[in-house]
Length: 69
Image 1: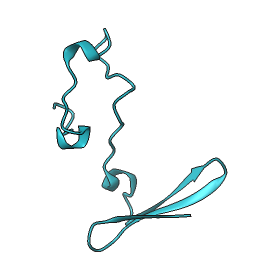
Image 2: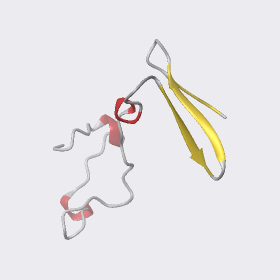
Image 3: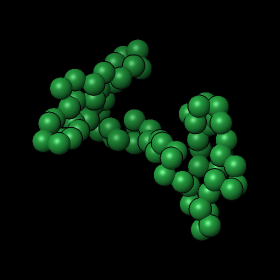
């Protein structure tokens, strides 16, 4: 795909042209894919606030992600 998404990231399915909006936008059914490195530009962790709760998302040396509350 032109935006860098692979078939693997979309569950092995490519959306057909008819699934896109008339303006060419992607439907809201597809997940928004963001690279962790784009979120954590200054390190290996980010803090996420969701409904007044704080969560820590960090990347391990093995490249795995750990989410803690």
